[in-house]
Length: 305
Image (tube, rainbow, N blue to C red; front, side):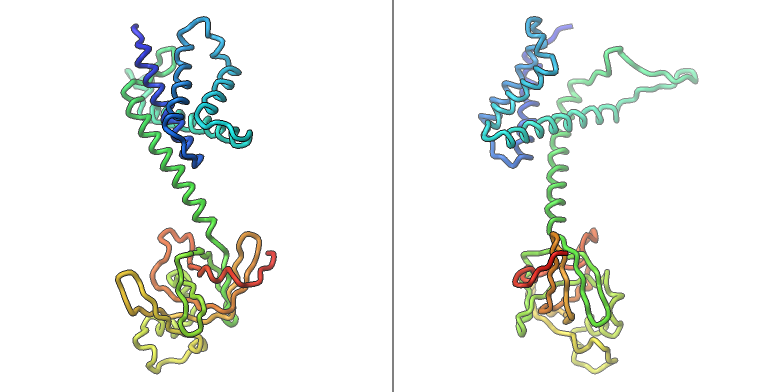
Protein backbone atom coordinates (compact mmCIF):
# COMPACT_ATOMS: atom_id res chain seq x y z
CA UNK A 1 0.00 0.00 0.00
CA UNK A 2 1.42 3.40 -1.00
CA UNK A 3 1.36 6.14 1.64
CA UNK A 4 1.54 9.72 0.41
CA UNK A 5 3.16 11.41 3.37
CA UNK A 6 2.90 14.89 1.89
CA UNK A 7 -0.86 14.54 1.48
CA UNK A 8 -1.28 13.22 5.02
CA UNK A 9 0.84 16.08 6.37
CA UNK A 10 -1.12 18.72 4.41
CA UNK A 11 -4.42 17.28 5.61
CA UNK A 12 -3.24 17.34 9.22
CA UNK A 13 -1.93 20.88 8.83
CA UNK A 14 -5.35 22.08 7.65
CA UNK A 15 -7.15 20.24 10.45
CA UNK A 16 -4.77 21.52 13.12
CA UNK A 17 -5.19 25.06 11.80
CA UNK A 18 -8.97 24.78 12.12
CA UNK A 19 -8.74 23.30 15.62
CA UNK A 20 -6.46 26.10 16.80
CA UNK A 21 -8.67 28.70 15.12
CA UNK A 22 -11.76 27.34 16.89
CA UNK A 23 -9.86 27.37 20.18
CA UNK A 24 -9.01 31.03 19.63
CA UNK A 25 -12.63 31.84 18.81
CA UNK A 26 -13.89 30.20 21.99
CA UNK A 27 -11.21 32.00 24.01
CA UNK A 28 -12.32 35.33 22.50
CA UNK A 29 -8.72 35.98 21.51
CA UNK A 30 -7.65 37.72 18.34
CA UNK A 31 -4.91 35.41 17.10
CA UNK A 32 -2.97 36.42 14.02
CA UNK A 33 -3.14 34.04 11.10
CA UNK A 34 0.65 33.85 11.13
CA UNK A 35 0.62 32.44 14.65
CA UNK A 36 -2.19 30.03 13.79
CA UNK A 37 -0.19 28.79 10.83
CA UNK A 38 2.93 28.40 13.00
CA UNK A 39 1.03 26.42 15.61
CA UNK A 40 -0.59 24.25 12.96
CA UNK A 41 2.80 23.65 11.34
CA UNK A 42 4.30 22.50 14.63
CA UNK A 43 1.27 20.28 15.32
CA UNK A 44 1.37 18.73 11.84
CA UNK A 45 5.00 17.69 12.29
CA UNK A 46 3.78 15.06 14.72
CA UNK A 47 2.65 12.98 11.73
CA UNK A 48 6.28 12.68 10.65
CA UNK A 49 7.23 11.21 14.01
CA UNK A 50 5.00 8.21 13.30
CA UNK A 51 7.12 7.26 10.27
CA UNK A 52 10.58 7.78 11.79
CA UNK A 53 11.61 4.79 13.96
CA UNK A 54 14.19 6.81 15.91
CA UNK A 55 11.42 9.20 17.04
CA UNK A 56 9.04 6.51 18.25
CA UNK A 57 9.44 7.81 21.82
CA UNK A 58 7.28 10.79 20.75
CA UNK A 59 4.25 8.50 20.80
CA UNK A 60 4.50 8.11 24.58
CA UNK A 61 1.66 9.83 26.51
CA UNK A 62 4.10 12.09 28.38
CA UNK A 63 5.71 13.29 25.16
CA UNK A 64 2.30 13.92 23.61
CA UNK A 65 1.44 16.02 26.65
CA UNK A 66 4.63 18.05 26.42
CA UNK A 67 4.26 18.48 22.67
CA UNK A 68 0.74 19.90 23.12
CA UNK A 69 2.25 22.53 25.44
CA UNK A 70 4.60 23.53 22.63
CA UNK A 71 1.70 23.78 20.16
CA UNK A 72 -0.33 26.02 22.47
CA UNK A 73 2.72 28.17 23.28
CA UNK A 74 3.56 28.70 19.61
CA UNK A 75 -0.02 29.69 18.83
CA UNK A 76 -1.22 31.71 21.82
CA UNK A 77 2.01 32.64 23.54
CA UNK A 78 2.49 32.87 27.29
CA UNK A 79 1.45 35.76 29.51
CA UNK A 80 0.67 34.02 32.77
CA UNK A 81 0.30 30.40 33.79
CA UNK A 82 -3.45 30.50 34.44
CA UNK A 83 -4.39 31.85 31.01
CA UNK A 84 -1.92 29.51 29.32
CA UNK A 85 -3.38 26.53 31.18
CA UNK A 86 -6.90 27.56 30.13
CA UNK A 87 -5.75 27.71 26.49
CA UNK A 88 -4.22 24.27 26.79
CA UNK A 89 -7.34 22.73 28.37
CA UNK A 90 -9.63 24.32 25.80
CA UNK A 91 -7.40 23.08 22.98
CA UNK A 92 -7.86 19.52 24.25
CA UNK A 93 -11.60 20.12 24.69
CA UNK A 94 -11.96 21.31 21.08
CA UNK A 95 -9.88 18.38 19.81
CA UNK A 96 -11.93 15.79 21.68
CA UNK A 97 -15.19 17.52 20.75
CA UNK A 98 -14.40 17.51 17.02
CA UNK A 99 -12.90 14.02 17.11
CA UNK A 100 -15.88 12.66 19.04
CA UNK A 101 -18.23 14.33 16.60
CA UNK A 102 -16.44 12.73 13.67
CA UNK A 103 -16.54 9.26 15.22
CA UNK A 104 -20.17 9.71 16.24
CA UNK A 105 -21.17 10.77 12.72
CA UNK A 106 -19.21 7.87 11.24
CA UNK A 107 -20.88 5.22 13.36
CA UNK A 108 -24.26 6.88 12.86
CA UNK A 109 -24.07 6.26 9.11
CA UNK A 110 -22.19 2.97 9.39
CA UNK A 111 -24.09 -0.32 9.22
CA UNK A 112 -22.07 -2.87 11.18
CA UNK A 113 -24.53 -5.73 11.14
CA UNK A 114 -26.15 -7.67 8.33
CA UNK A 115 -28.47 -10.66 8.31
CA UNK A 116 -27.17 -13.62 6.29
CA UNK A 117 -29.43 -16.69 6.02
CA UNK A 118 -31.22 -15.73 9.20
CA UNK A 119 -28.01 -15.16 11.17
CA UNK A 120 -26.60 -11.82 12.31
CA UNK A 121 -23.13 -11.12 10.95
CA UNK A 122 -20.83 -8.23 11.89
CA UNK A 123 -18.14 -6.65 9.75
CA UNK A 124 -14.66 -6.06 11.14
CA UNK A 125 -11.23 -5.64 9.61
CA UNK A 126 -9.33 -6.49 12.79
CA UNK A 127 -7.76 -3.02 12.92
CA UNK A 128 -10.78 -0.97 13.93
CA UNK A 129 -13.24 0.62 11.56
CA UNK A 130 -11.54 2.63 8.80
CA UNK A 131 -12.90 6.05 7.87
CA UNK A 132 -12.74 7.08 4.22
CA UNK A 133 -10.84 10.14 3.08
CA UNK A 134 -13.98 11.57 1.53
CA UNK A 135 -15.81 11.29 4.85
CA UNK A 136 -12.96 13.06 6.65
CA UNK A 137 -12.68 15.87 4.09
CA UNK A 138 -16.41 16.53 4.14
CA UNK A 139 -17.24 15.59 7.71
CA UNK A 140 -14.51 17.54 9.49
CA UNK A 141 -15.58 21.03 8.27
CA UNK A 142 -19.24 20.15 8.91
CA UNK A 143 -18.54 19.03 12.47
CA UNK A 144 -16.28 22.08 12.96
CA UNK A 145 -19.04 24.49 11.93
CA UNK A 146 -21.64 22.60 13.92
CA UNK A 147 -19.50 22.67 17.08
CA UNK A 148 -18.70 26.37 16.66
CA UNK A 149 -22.34 27.34 16.29
CA UNK A 150 -23.47 25.12 19.18
CA UNK A 151 -20.90 26.62 21.54
CA UNK A 152 -21.84 30.15 20.44
CA UNK A 153 -25.51 29.30 21.02
CA UNK A 154 -24.74 28.03 24.52
CA UNK A 155 -22.82 31.21 25.26
CA UNK A 156 -25.69 33.36 24.01
CA UNK A 157 -28.11 31.39 26.18
CA UNK A 158 -25.86 31.84 29.22
CA UNK A 159 -25.65 35.59 28.65
CA UNK A 160 -29.41 35.68 28.14
CA UNK A 161 -30.13 33.92 31.42
CA UNK A 162 -27.65 36.15 33.26
CA UNK A 163 -30.09 38.98 32.50
CA UNK A 164 -33.08 37.24 34.08
CA UNK A 165 -34.44 38.05 37.54
CA UNK A 166 -37.23 36.81 39.79
CA UNK A 167 -40.03 39.36 40.01
CA UNK A 168 -42.89 39.60 42.49
CA UNK A 169 -45.69 42.10 41.81
CA UNK A 170 -48.14 43.07 44.58
CA UNK A 171 -51.48 44.72 43.81
CA UNK A 172 -53.74 44.84 46.88
CA UNK A 173 -53.97 41.27 48.12
CA UNK A 174 -52.86 39.74 44.80
CA UNK A 175 -49.23 38.69 44.29
CA UNK A 176 -47.97 37.86 40.80
CA UNK A 177 -44.71 35.92 40.43
CA UNK A 178 -42.83 36.14 37.15
CA UNK A 179 -39.41 35.84 35.52
CA UNK A 180 -38.25 39.20 34.20
CA UNK A 181 -35.77 40.07 31.46
CA UNK A 182 -33.60 43.12 32.11
CA UNK A 183 -33.79 44.99 28.83
CA UNK A 184 -31.46 47.97 28.52
CA UNK A 185 -33.31 48.95 25.34
CA UNK A 186 -36.58 49.48 27.22
CA UNK A 187 -36.75 53.23 27.86
CA UNK A 188 -40.53 53.52 28.12
CA UNK A 189 -41.65 56.00 30.79
CA UNK A 190 -44.89 57.62 31.82
CA UNK A 191 -44.66 61.21 30.49
CA UNK A 192 -46.72 62.60 33.40
CA UNK A 193 -45.13 60.95 36.43
CA UNK A 194 -41.79 59.95 34.93
CA UNK A 195 -42.27 56.41 36.28
CA UNK A 196 -40.52 53.63 34.36
CA UNK A 197 -42.83 51.17 32.61
CA UNK A 198 -42.20 47.44 32.74
CA UNK A 199 -44.08 45.08 30.40
CA UNK A 200 -46.11 42.11 31.65
CA UNK A 201 -47.11 39.22 29.39
CA UNK A 202 -50.88 38.92 29.80
CA UNK A 203 -51.01 35.68 27.83
CA UNK A 204 -49.38 34.18 30.95
CA UNK A 205 -50.78 36.31 33.80
CA UNK A 206 -54.23 37.34 32.58
CA UNK A 207 -55.93 35.12 35.18
CA UNK A 208 -54.55 37.34 37.96
CA UNK A 209 -56.53 40.36 36.76
CA UNK A 210 -60.30 41.06 37.02
CA UNK A 211 -62.22 40.42 33.76
CA UNK A 212 -63.63 43.97 33.73
CA UNK A 213 -60.14 45.48 33.85
CA UNK A 214 -58.96 43.14 31.08
CA UNK A 215 -61.84 44.27 28.89
CA UNK A 216 -60.98 47.94 29.42
CA UNK A 217 -57.29 47.30 28.78
CA UNK A 218 -58.03 45.55 25.50
CA UNK A 219 -60.26 48.38 24.27
CA UNK A 220 -58.22 51.49 24.90
CA UNK A 221 -60.37 53.55 22.52
CA UNK A 222 -63.36 52.94 24.83
CA UNK A 223 -61.35 53.65 27.95
CA UNK A 224 -63.32 56.76 28.90
CA UNK A 225 -66.72 55.16 28.36
CA UNK A 226 -68.68 54.15 31.42
CA UNK A 227 -69.05 50.47 32.05
CA UNK A 228 -68.81 47.86 34.74
CA UNK A 229 -66.77 49.19 37.66
CA UNK A 230 -63.72 47.42 39.01
CA UNK A 231 -61.71 47.75 42.24
CA UNK A 232 -58.51 48.29 40.25
CA UNK A 233 -59.98 50.79 37.82
CA UNK A 234 -58.33 53.72 39.62
CA UNK A 235 -54.96 52.06 38.94
CA UNK A 236 -55.32 52.16 35.16
CA UNK A 237 -53.10 54.50 33.16
CA UNK A 238 -52.65 55.20 29.44
CA UNK A 239 -49.03 55.50 28.35
CA UNK A 240 -48.19 56.80 24.86
CA UNK A 241 -45.25 55.22 23.09
CA UNK A 242 -43.62 55.10 19.69
CA UNK A 243 -42.70 51.85 17.95
CA UNK A 244 -40.53 51.37 14.87
CA UNK A 245 -42.54 52.44 11.85
CA UNK A 246 -45.55 53.41 13.99
CA UNK A 247 -46.48 56.63 15.74
CA UNK A 248 -49.04 57.60 18.38
CA UNK A 249 -49.44 54.18 19.96
CA UNK A 250 -50.97 53.71 23.41
CA UNK A 251 -50.36 51.12 26.09
CA UNK A 252 -52.65 50.37 28.98
CA UNK A 253 -50.76 50.15 32.28
CA UNK A 254 -51.53 49.40 35.92
CA UNK A 255 -50.08 51.09 39.01
CA UNK A 256 -48.96 48.36 41.46
CA UNK A 257 -48.34 48.74 45.19
CA UNK A 258 -44.78 47.48 44.76
CA UNK A 259 -42.55 45.33 42.61
CA UNK A 260 -39.83 43.21 44.22
CA UNK A 261 -36.84 42.14 42.10
CA UNK A 262 -34.47 39.37 43.22
CA UNK A 263 -31.16 39.38 41.37
CA UNK A 264 -27.68 38.09 42.25
CA UNK A 265 -28.44 37.53 45.92
CA UNK A 266 -30.06 40.91 46.52
CA UNK A 267 -33.64 42.16 46.54
CA UNK A 268 -34.92 45.51 45.30
CA UNK A 269 -38.30 46.99 46.13
CA UNK A 270 -39.65 49.40 43.52
CA UNK A 271 -42.81 51.42 44.15
CA UNK A 272 -42.57 54.12 41.52
CA UNK A 273 -43.33 51.99 38.46
CA UNK A 274 -46.12 51.19 36.02
CA UNK A 275 -46.90 47.78 34.57
CA UNK A 276 -47.72 47.84 30.88
CA UNK A 277 -50.13 45.09 29.84
CA UNK A 278 -49.14 43.25 26.69
CA UNK A 279 -51.70 40.86 25.20
CA UNK A 280 -49.10 39.44 22.83
CA UNK A 281 -46.49 36.93 23.93
CA UNK A 282 -43.15 38.63 24.67
CA UNK A 283 -41.14 35.38 24.72
CA UNK A 284 -41.70 32.65 22.17
CA UNK A 285 -40.05 30.04 24.40
CA UNK A 286 -41.68 31.38 27.61
CA UNK A 287 -38.28 31.91 29.25
CA UNK A 288 -39.60 35.08 30.84
CA UNK A 289 -43.00 36.73 31.20
CA UNK A 290 -42.13 40.36 31.87
CA UNK A 291 -39.59 42.93 30.66
CA UNK A 292 -37.96 45.15 33.27
CA UNK A 293 -36.98 48.76 32.79
CA UNK A 294 -33.24 49.29 33.59
CA UNK A 295 -34.16 52.30 35.74
CA UNK A 296 -35.89 49.90 38.12
CA UNK A 297 -32.49 48.51 39.13
CA UNK A 298 -30.94 51.86 40.07
CA UNK A 299 -31.67 54.30 42.83
CA UNK A 300 -33.40 51.75 45.06
CA UNK A 301 -32.24 50.31 48.35
CA UNK A 302 -31.12 46.71 48.04
CA UNK A 303 -31.29 44.08 50.75
CA UNK A 304 -29.68 40.62 50.91
CA UNK A 305 -32.09 37.92 49.81
